Length: 307
Image 1 (cartoon, one colour):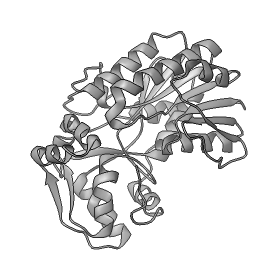
Image 2: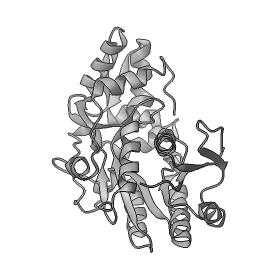
Image 3: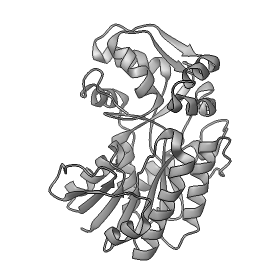
Image 4: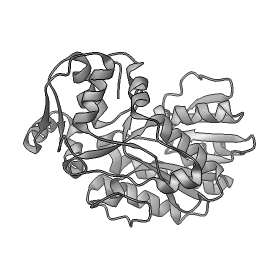
């Protein structure tokens, strides 16, 4: 990828890791978020902007080669906030001629027996899955080159997933920990830095466009992951229990984010497996070994994994 300017919408860990990779490769990067913020690299510029403002986003995107949509509205506001952002980003790409790389997840596939692969049709069984699927279908119908990178539950410093928000802090503090679903079912976990590497590789490959790619991910159960983390952290493993649907529903009565988790329970009640062989072959990205992923999380210190 020759030197160019790229625009990233979203300043979460995946967006910022993507910006860092591009900047280190000699590219100029603009990172858009509501709050802006300070830059971590001389070739990265942080801009405060509401990504739903298509006119402002288009003006900012002028002259950029690639738009990376790494935005993430509040989990309980997806139907209201996600589609306007996706529409504005698509319009900015169409108006400027930039390529568009979107970051998504596995929700659009719905219930799948066996490993999920990119050729599966969109068959969402949840509100949030329908939001994801509709945004992808609208983007595919646009007048731009587009590709999508799909990840499973995030791990890594500052990663936001049900495990990092609900279970990890208790594990590291020695308090009894819990997580919904089958604690012994195999589950795919995507490292935020591998997500960024996949986004950058997809943007640079002529093979990427018009299709989706899965992030190469580690596969282990919730229980095995919890044991590996406490062992590597050198702390005693606290009791780990499966949170029942009724218990989760009670928590959701006072927490709007946890209330939204209930419809995604099927991803934790059975194996959640991701086939990423196409990404590994075509884009040259492989999953970081799980001990390195855990080390990355632990570098943040106990209790510092945040939403």
